[in-house]
Length: 258
Image 1 (cartoon, helix red, strand yellow):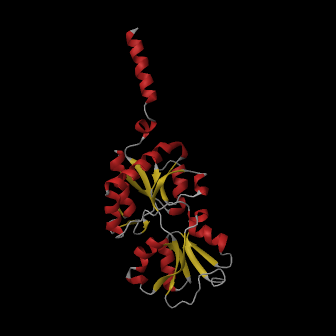
Image 2 (image 1 turned 135 degrees about the horizontal axis):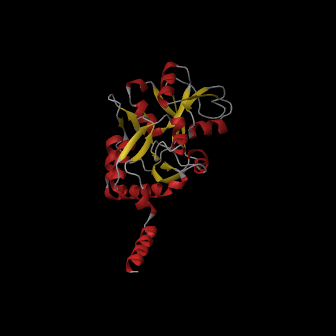
């Protein structure tokens, strides 16, 4: 009788234990694009590097699991998550109401505005009228694409598998302008020798309808406990200074946003 009772008590305690303690996978497979410098990219040896990679490792340390990175093309990154190819996405995936219909998110871990990049010699004005008929590029399946389709119907929009391809076409003159987030465009293009003849132009764009609420860790809806664990880890690395050290290493400033 005592043995049976003890077994029932143990089973009840196991059922009462937090789901996150029982179900967090280790290693935790994290998808990233590997083509969005300096947030995430592949080095000469094919290893993932960048702000998000260092931050992911710091967060995994807080959670108590090992990060295992999976490189995934951007336009397949949410389908791959839903197909259970990995457990989470850390790839500058902005939290939007539209994406929340498909997946769950942690709290944000960075937030920066979007802006247009043009040749310094360009006479383009960044207004709906000034961009009428202009050839404008951006990465496929991004908030930038959605914004321009909604708000700038008069442009000739070209979309690319990676932002790196869009930069190349801007350099070659195949497009007149591109839209990107200000940190990725500045650190990953404008501050390089290839970007010397280009500049930001026009206002910064932050509307939540298109650009959401900052980049978060994306997970399947049934794995919301993983998002919760990352939210706690984001707060922890912000509090202990690790986040600021990583941001200083990659940008020289804090990209968390307001």
